[in-house]
Length: 305
Image 1 (spheres, helix red, strand yellow):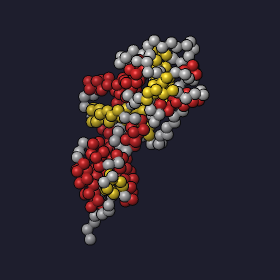
Image 2 (cartoon, one colour):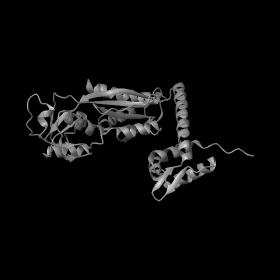
Image 3 (cartoon, one colour):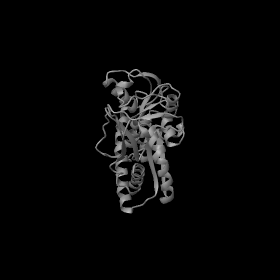
Image 4 (cartoon, one colour):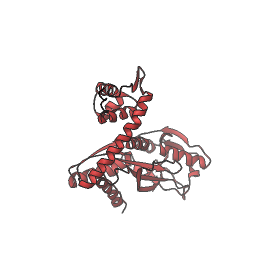
């Protein structure tokens, strides 16, 4: 009796992407292929393994029990291949290829754009791809092998746990500031309780910044009077400039070239945002990833000096 062929690694990666995105179409978008091509490759993988891997219905697709088991093994295979690649890269010292980064918007604009310009001149064989995504999404993509570096932010009182096989480095630390219309009168020695009767323009509560600001207000004994909830930071700044309310934001996220706003420090309570770079431990010593990380940290260090 002939042995069944081993599952193809590329198809295992594809199944993992379907599981991560929750649909064939989502996986197709990420991978840059058609949904029918994804479906065809999954069908071949099902023939290779001899089991049904996906439940297909009009509502979408989901993993079968066998599919969930295979995805777990697929992730282990991908991690092993990544560790092997990292060791080979260390031996060769090669600084060429693609580095995939997931970043929060403010760091993408203020740090990654100039870093890309610098690397294009100094390391022309290094290709950066950047996706601007929420920290929770970039960490998930990092864990699943879709990214090499994640740039995420953490806020006071909004804890995030990182698996021990991820390596984190602090990139910067900044206190949140009060952002107001340009003619807004701010009392001396400003405290958060001075703002309890103000109208607010806030980011959504599902995001870390929105959670941190609401937690701080509630800890001071009041619920912020949220008049606008805005996920677009450019719109948020313009709404504040036009008098729709005030907000607490990280300074790097405030683009006052969009519209004039006032930016004010406040004394109590001090709310911090920490920005981290995150990589898998298998990638942390890869020369190409290390070169990009070093340039990112160098850029932030130079800007702070």
